[in-house]
Image (cartoon, rainbow, N blue to C red; front, side, top):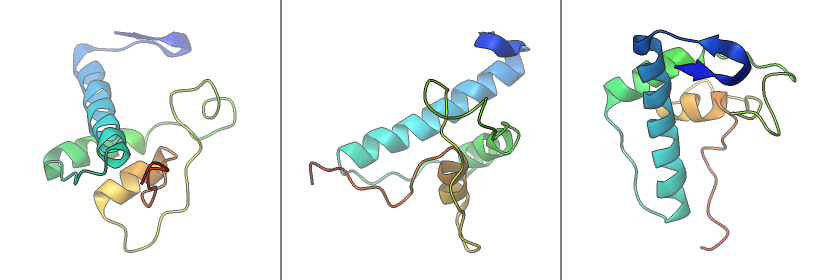
Length: 98
């Protein structure tokens, strides 16, 4: 798998990227349509492991990048909340359509 300026990755790593995308974008969709989202803990754990390795710099995050800069993570945060905050998503976000 090739990822823009980061080069190519082995299949196992590429599949982990895909899993991270699936978990996070499923949360995006669930929030947008006001539906509960409770992904399997092992999927969240694997995605979180990868998210912790993604550089959080101005050159790798922000407009035009795959993720925003990380948000502050509460000390008692669940793995899912931590994952979302690490990737720049506000876990408390509510659709403006509500």
